[in-house]
Image (cartoon, rainbow, N blue to C red; front, side, top):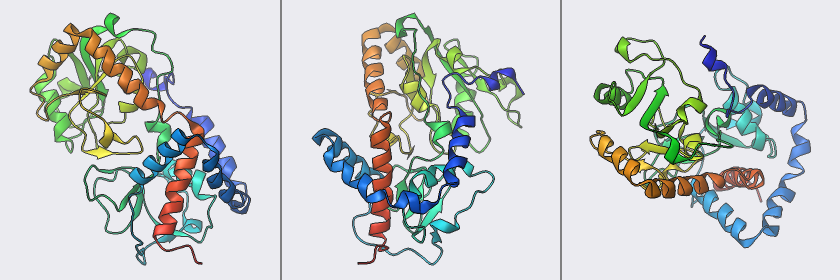
Length: 327
């Protein structure tokens, strides 16, 4: 293992994450269930602005309007188990599902979900489409995806006039392969893959920690199996996120990001990359404006109280719209 993989600066503390979540499992769910009503009612005591934000995001994540029945494959909350490979999904769900009656059911699709399910399902990711109502988003795998730069001391103007990219690239990701084919070795790009596979061995490069990537004006945020996992921390920095228009979204609401306002938009075939980089190198004021907008967008996810209330509200609406609350 490369030493750089052990660098935790800017990353979430996974040890602390697992300790907190295992401790939660030791407390009976009944204890939390008694607090649900009080927590949901607390929304009314917030400012009008916060109430409006919660309502908007609730209905963005959970678009169910009419009641709908679950299928016979739905699983009780009490039957969900810790499974190797999906522990973070289980823990991130349980953080909020523990407040609900454990006999309530749902369709829980863990992992990188890029299709719209046939029944209303709780997911981490979904396609950005008008008919994605059955994909209800929750903040899952957040220890990996939701990390931010606390203090990027280097201003945009003092960073390198280049684009950087480090990440795994697989043959099942033709869009990532195409980028390397077009721009590996380009004088304005420091890019490469960090994994070993059957792809061009010349593309294999050493890893870079986040601080090293922050030395560059531009950071590539290409979708992988679903979303670009680095997009959140890049948009919280003083560097510009560079990417095509996203096709998938998570709790981060990638579908609401505005091209050339929150990030630098490039064509799906990457043909305009060089011209876009040169434009923002020569128009620093425009670059700084995008960085400011990106930082402001990220800030809405840093309010733990609102994040908790929105998550509980999304689940509550799910159980309500799937006819599980008996009168």
